[in-house]
Image: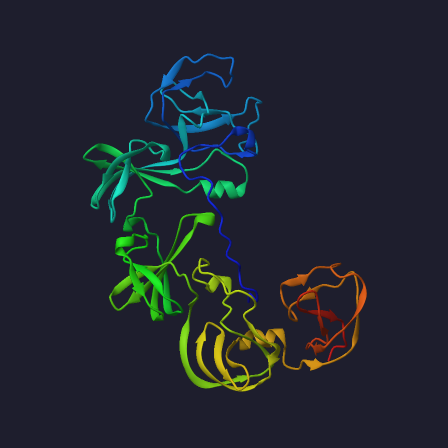
Length: 421
């Protein structure tokens, strides 16, 4: 269970115009061999990867060329963590060499296709799959026949994050009235790879809904806070540019949203008593685990959503709604709060008792947020040897004694061997 809310961090995309193979090579720290390159200009062929050799033939612009190898001029045969300068490509006269040039070619994966796409919005047409070459021509919403797909992948990148940020742009070649033209990330339902996500969810704030998972403003509708059925989800984009879509059933039909407010999954309305078997922390909203959060795009609440400094005492409480393992209850002194009974039993097992015992911390101690947790809060040696005062302890069935003390920023558990019962 994740006890801290994730903080959504917005990363500014530095690469605004797709299609370039790389920035200045002096800044590139890593490289990889592409599957194909698309030639934007006439490209010379060489018999060897050497600046001193002379070209003996050329490849015409406007074609994909399969890459079968690379060379840096230093005869190294691996394709990672060095600056690629030459590519070996398939030609009609055998495998030959071309000089890698970001201005005259673009790199990635190419596949021939034969299918139909339905455009739901006007798209800009490109003569070639390069974001620097946009035309002033567009194609209106209609069904189109696609003959090829090209996914841009950079050759040079500074680190793993830049590789993710620069990858994933998808191009499709289609038959149009102007002949074969390229479309950049077209808005077509056939390209949506939705995954089933069936259940009842609660929208906790107003959302903007669309017929398809594309943010087309003239198709936008309002979705007020309400309980709805979820149908599917889809993540568009890659890395920091990902957009998380959720498909829901509204009165007017099935719609897609990118939640800007928390969405409570596995939502249930309750009218029953909840028996808390141990003291439990209380919160202003359910702290859903990362795998249960529909999207991380909505803003998280400022500050700590925990309510009250001390845990809520074990006892019987009126429950009126739930989300996943979290239950919303009425309390006499805190108002309506959320608790997680299962998590509470882990954090403070039944049988935990108050104590004021002194515990000597050692260099070999490891620290946990609850007994038998698979995750450590702090590793060995985090605290220098010292004596702390525990305020709670729990004896496990195997005799191990766990002590809870006030650690750095949070309460932590440390264990000591005991006598087996």
